[in-house]
Image (cartoon, rainbow, N blue to C red):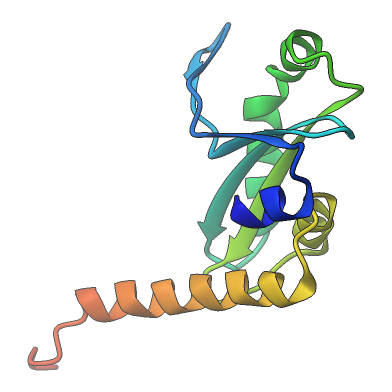
Length: 137
């Protein structure tokens, strides 16, 4: 969020807004409005096997896509788009996620930091649930 404001001081960033839709209340991580448009940003870390990363992107686009026409109209924005930030639990970052981060002005060095944070968090979760004293039969 700070990097978005750093890159565009005229941007408006709303953290975890509660938005209403025909499907009920939705709460994306960020809504960003800048001179390009309005963006619904939602972050998820998923297991990297199979199509899980691709499925996560599609889920986020479907979930928040219903909000776009109203958000564009209400904010008088030239465009509206869902930017799903999907990262693998081992740090993988799909090309689509990199493109979304670039639209927000997030530099490559920060993209690497995001990947490393996902990996580190996954390792911490793994170790939190490991029982090193358990006897293996």
